[in-house]
Image (tube, rainbow, N blue to C red):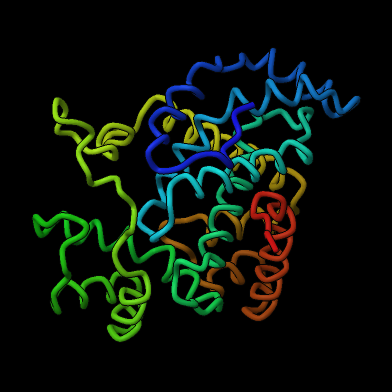
Length: 291
């Protein structure tokens, strides 16, 4: 297996070429290997499962390149998440390994970003975490609409737009922007005298690649499958609330649902809270916490 510990910025493109040499597994091959690893902890099976999915780690790591952290470090942490996912993966659940692993990959990367010494200490409240991981994505969208590059300075108007979109104070956006600072990655340098593209342009683009589409499709299928199975076990009131309140674009009010079942507004609220708690437990393994 390629050792991502040895990566540095200058070798990322080489690493990417290397991991693409490992062929993707068919569903049947993957199931057989995963089953073998689960039952016997066979190292060869584990190696094939991990190496065939290393390319996905790179794609996911690229989502976080604007957090003032080296891409090589993000890939390293993502690979650790991939390995951790394999130790917990159950092939008999009926979904692909990457569908499950993607949550662990992101969890390890996000945990590393929050802890890395290259960032000024960032608060770890839920609101601060949300702002931390949403700011750059939203900033990129706003700047693109303004015809600016990501690394350009955001003005007062753009800062206000970002704060409104994220539902936070302008002061919070300004403070987080200062903390994040500019990226120290060397991906803006051109590749060579004969190639004026940057490294980032070479290994990433605005259009989703085939690999990225696979990841998103697998992730979507996993969530839908798990949710469908969960709702089959729910009672009538829970299913109704799930479809007509939690999952609806035009959710019904507590009063409307109460009238449907002949129960009070408060009783509907209690059922909804109980349902939410069941959902949190059902999907807990897809939102891993990394210490």
